[in-house]
Image (tube, rainbow, N blue to C red; front, top):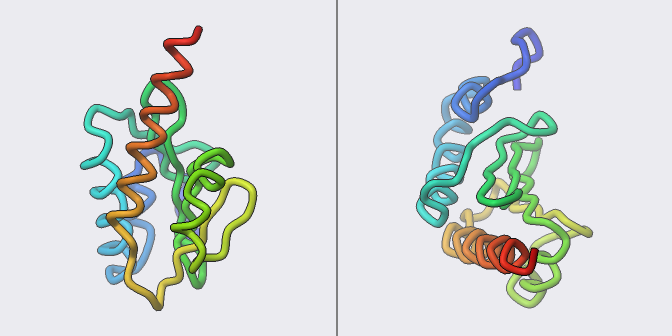
Length: 124
């Protein structure tokens, strides 16, 4: 992201701060999340694009060599088998820029997060 700009206030502003070729990828990631979570609120949180529906669903951010995808620790554990080919940590996944973006997996994780949020709200 360009350091001369002020902090983005929207996901569109966040994406617009990157070079054109990276914007296309980030827009595709955002569209993938939107398709899996219609009606989700879009925000910038912790300086990253974030999607909320009842609670946080996911965050994502462009890094030098990968797109960081942050679906919460529970989701990383739940999808551990499907995420084996990617570097993961407690609540994060790294999708390398030199590989095809796994849009179907991203959507699957987002739909799972929606289910988890709804279950948590129902339990309250």
